[in-house]
Structures are given as C-alpha cells and as structure tokens.
Length: 255
Image 1 (tube, rainbow, N blue to C red):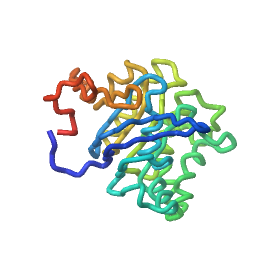
Image 2 (image 1 turned 30 degrees about the vertical axis):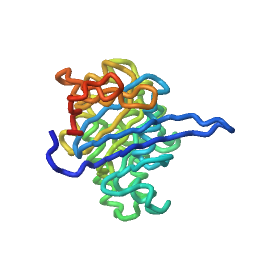
Image 3 (image 1 turned 135 degrees about the vertical axis):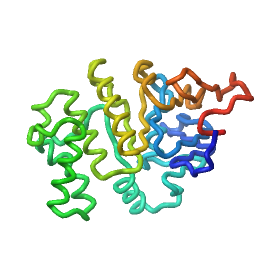
C-alpha cells in the first residue's frame, strides 16, 4: 500500500532500444516502476532480460529511448552531463560483479577515491570515513592490503565500502555475487542487507540466482524486457504484472 511518500526512483513507460547497424534491438519495453527510499530491491531474471540495462538507466550511465526516469527527484533526461556526473558522484554508489578495484592501490586508497573526486573532504575527514566504513564491512585489519592480497569475498567487501563511503542515497549492484562461491555470496547479501538496515541506504541489485533473490526485501522480475512480477520474496507474495497478471492484484510499492 502506498504511504504517499514520493518514491526515490520512478520509471514511467520506459523503453530502451539499442541499434546494431540498421537493426533495432529492444532491451526494455514499457517499464513502470516505483522504488521507495530504504528499499532492498532485487531485479531478477535470466540473462538478456534487461536487468543491467535497467540498472544503467537508474544509475544515470545510460539514457532511455522513450519514457521518464526520475532518480532522487531529478528527471535524468533534463540534466546536463555535468549535473548527471554530480548526481552519480553525490547520490549514487555502484558495485560490480568484477569488483572494479584499482590493482595498484591498497584497500584504503580504493575506498578513499570517491571522496577525493568529491573534493569536499579534508584528509582527516577522509581517513576517518574510510576507517569507519571499512570497519562496518569487517575489513578494519585489511586497510593496506592490495586487491591481489585479498580473497574474492574480501574484494567485494572493499567494493561495497567504496560504494557506501560517500553516503549515497542509492546503491546499484550488478550481479554482485556472480564471481563468488555460494557461501560467500550469501554472506555478501547479508552484509548488504545489514548496511541497508543500519544506514537506510536504498539498494537495487540484479541477479539470476533464485537463492540470492529469496534474501531480498523486494523482488522485481524481468522477462524479455518487461516486468513479469513484483512482490515480497520474504513471504512468498509475488504479484503478476505482465500479460498473465491478475488484473486486481496491486504490486507492492505501486498501489
């Protein structure tokens, strides 16, 4: 049921079409979606369903072909490139399946890097914030280890710390457990849920793993570029929104 609060992410009739030569390939087809502040939402679906494309639109690294994408109150189509860059830097965080850490930098420097880009933190403030977030992800003793000295799970924890160090409103995670074993992957999801609960950050992540999906607070399932269902995997309630949907079912967050 709607609380009346403005959603932190709103997509209205969003379409994304890629051009391969003279051929048009539709990736998203008429997406309508609201995500509330503080949600822990997973975008699920098979490879090619449009998960990464949807994350890229919300993360302001791509633009919709048609429709409206509103992120933290900003209509992204109306922002200049410099304002989009500022929105990404100040309000958004990103976690990737390949970690995307800088190999020649230690964990501290990797996590500090977004703060340096913001240019508004003193050296002491940066050090305190990095140490604080590294402690929160359980890596206080690994500040000066380089990525090749860390396990896959530890590297992903560094990536999570880097995404959260600027205190973003929204964190996007694209298949964050794909390169991890199942036990470590579930530990990473548990960590993200704890940070979501403790910091109030909105998490939106993609996966095709049903076991990971079951740990989400909210599930949005994509099939062939369309939302097929949305709901609460915690209690098994999923509401159809596609061609076979129950027309009387109100999707969670969209009522």
